[in-house]
Image (cartoon, rainbow over all chains, first blue to last red; front, side, top):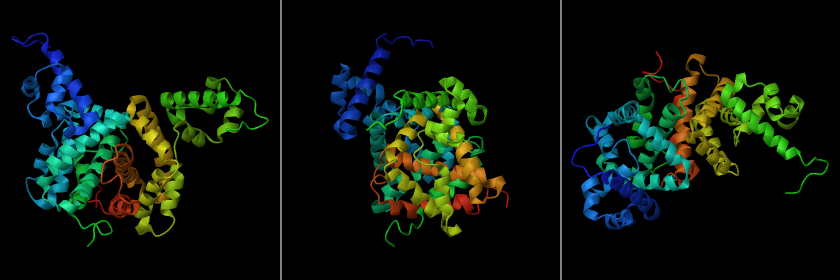
Length: 202
Length: 202
């Protein structure tokens, strides 16, 4: 890789130091408890430098997780159009992410998430702050039902990714993505907007 | 633990040696390619001792994986009764396994499966030989559709387990299991026995 001109040699290390301090802070104190100021102190840099490198706290957290996609982008894509087709568009956008250039980062993320209690805790923070808090309100669901609906849908999608991209189970692994969209889309749609007797009071 | 009388002190080591040799053989050669004879040679014991400790090759493989349950038992339980209720009974039996005394072994298995390519390969063998080959024929599905149907259902269940028991995402983690049976049962039922337009030719 060609080093960009005008950058001081110390900078890539600074970036890594910030990410490392952020990872510890988010895992120990949670998203809300970890301040940019404390992360900067942990990395031995000025807080302004954290903002310079990563922008918002949300963006820093996504970088810390090596997230291959911003969940808000996925949900924005899924909700742009007919509401009865959210499930199908959701699954399609999700599979496109895994099948695209960022797919290997997604595999690494899923592996690391499951690997230890520490990364599992980070991932819970990810789900709470990036998916439930930032992305879900855009779906326009009943707030009393939204979190269970979205975690049911997300758990199904996580299992699909696990089977198809990490464990690579056939025939799932080599099925055309549109076959899986047709199969899984209606299940996700039902979780998000369908009647769920026995789950929510009628 | 009290040592059983009449057992030679070397025996627990022998059992571990067989499991270790089996693990390597199954991962390298697959279930079919790994012979009991070769596993015995790898462990430096007589093949009869392998049968003495573990019974069948299937049972040895399940022990190698530390499988908390025999998939055949799960499917037998799910198929005992009304065919329209397979999905609900499947999810109920699956959650009971994770919520029961063998749940921590299941968490360890899922963590290890995702952790490395090596264990992922072992798990593919597990799915092919123990789930698809041994258990699925009992469901009485169209053989042309059975493998995609069961891997769709299994991927959903794996994701549910990942979210509820490994990552512990709320509100999934503390929802009553019967709430999840009501939510996920119909989705599993659809994968197993429902019409799936766009997936299979009408």
